[in-house]
Image (cartoon, rainbow, N blue to C red; front, side, top):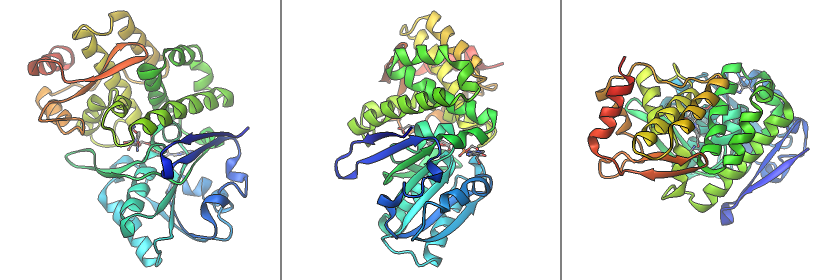
Length: 360
Ligand code: NAD
Ligand code: GLY
């Protein structure tokens, strides 16, 4: 069954194709490629598994492939430069199409290289992790990390199409599957309480990779993300809600060293911190905070950060892209399914919160 959703952005609108076996449907990418020059960007883990099926969809195109080293610590300008070198050495022109085959790391690097090569060439996302299928492949945020902060270097650059073959999730390590579920829970928390109920009722079938359950969460997550991105592509307002738990989470990732905590794991613990801080400010109640922690626990995700050095942690949070005039704006929860962005707390509140709850 093929599910087709749309990200509605006027002339830059594009489809999200979700389904089983898409990587064996020979003509599925034909409308987007039309015999153009293609550079496939993948990594040393995903390329050997899915590179060959993907090439089966690229008939009629000139195709080169670059395989990057695997891992979040390689999401840097060095790998972007490697992709740019491959484009230059392959004499790719402005009609090139960069195809990202892999998880969020490959997608973010390849998309950013496509955004800046010859001031922007087309790119296409073929996400192979749950996290990338529900989140990173959709919405056009591309970029890399800097030693001083997560995703600090980047550009908005929308893909031509997102092709999510749900069969690829069967080879994903368990820890990566859980990391993707953290972003799925996020959508329920910020925008759809009924979806959160559904996730709670289906934790076992999700962890067991039941195809229908995975299809449902990918579809609903992409519907919610597409709606938010269509309203606020450049994150001037509502899109920031998609960063629930991320200001805390990015600080955990930086604190621990990129790649030690998976992005989704940091988001889960970061969301629990955001929920606890919301409760401290009199927003969400303690029963809801406990409910969120229980759900992440059942999904085999961490609910607490590693021991925190409040000064360093706050400094890392201060590099967040939502900071305005030095104020860290946080996504806070009013109740399950309703969130808001706020800087409405006293400066010492956050430092006290970190010191009282997370210094061990
Ligand atoms: P990832 O890209 O590192 O992939 C996780 C691991 O799974 C890697 O080792 C990868 O090689 C492997 N893998 C991928 N597909 C596989 C498959 N089908 N079978 C077996 N192994 C497979 O991590 P991720 O969780 O996909 O993405 C995390 C990144 O996404 C972070 O850098 C995060 O900042 C970024 N992100 C970006 C956005 C955005 O809007 N652009 C949104 C959320 C997250
Ligand atoms: N993952 C956050 C966003 O796309 O805005």
